[in-house]
Image (cartoon, rainbow, N blue to C red; front, side, top):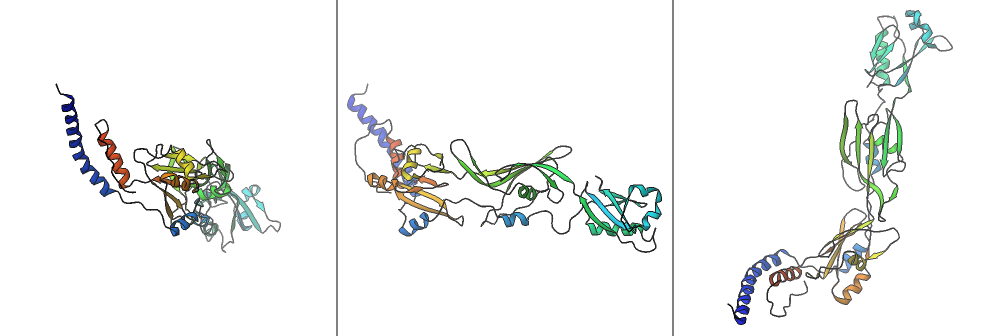
Length: 378
């Protein structure tokens, strides 16, 4: 049975052995932690001039990505009108009742719809391909169908689209006017749908007072005849950032969901009691001291002295300022530091905080002989 003096000696021996291992771990931790210094006046000035920054959509890059470029190409279900010479009527007099004629009776107006197979039917000659062709190419195909097989002279044929085919798509999320829209064959793409809905924008209030505005991406779901085609979210082009963007075709019944941003929050990470993201209600003005309160205060074991605050400037570049929050003066200073929407706060690790954590773990549950060590400000 150990005496009281033996027990004390045994416990001290255990602590000393644990301390030997702890010193090695402490040396490694201190080597991995860099010192933190308060920002210079110039850094503070640049930081105060930044934020809050909300990315804006690059409308020029968005519209330039439209699928339809150059002359219009006819699509299935479009209705065409072809103005052709009246001599065509003489080739097929039995079909006169189904056609319209101009007042001077010298030209024939033939109306036809582009089939799902992509063809149109002309008097006498029958079907010719039309879908995917320009109006000029359709005119040339019609002339070639009649001349020289049926007429001696090359006929003059003029085609125009009198009725565009439409598809119905649903646009929801962070757009100016969510709803169901009828898109013509010229508009049935992602960019066309976004423009039809008034463009990206709008402001929404979610539970907890979080304001949402702008958008970061869109999610598209196309409905096909056999199965749904699901497309991963597409990142939108942001002003000042070189993001590639490609337009997407839409089918009838497609759904376009614009994924909004959540800029009305701030985030506290690092050596605080409750790290996380917190709502920034409209009209509120929080200080660094408020933010520390939301995060439950600093971690009492680590006792960090520095908080780094990150935010974006107008160009999208990240800027940072470091504040000393130690002691009454530090807390008074924290009460005067404004936190803005989108800020990320970090209670910084330093050699000092890591030493405190290691020493706390080293002596937890053991016998601690009081001593004072100067771990420095960092």
